[in-house]
Image (cartoon, rainbow, N blue to C red; front, side, top):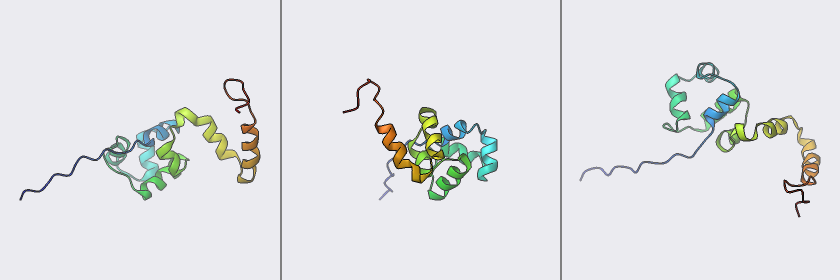
Length: 112
């Protein structure tokens, strides 16, 4: 009986390349920070090769973001907010969130 080919798996979108670009790193500079080959970084950024938890942690440290941000946040869409949140100390988050929630929404209403 011939082997049954595995179905091609579609990889989930991530933002490795966007974070590298956002931090103004060339692939060469990223390679120096990550200790990876050019082919590995290229294949991961293009979604050809899967990444693992170790890869996430190394890249997050090199790109000054969190592992969650690498796979959920396009830094070019929310960059200012992301950098602001990183500056906020944990003890101040509740106060700042309460202030932000009290601001009017885009339509000028109170959000209710």
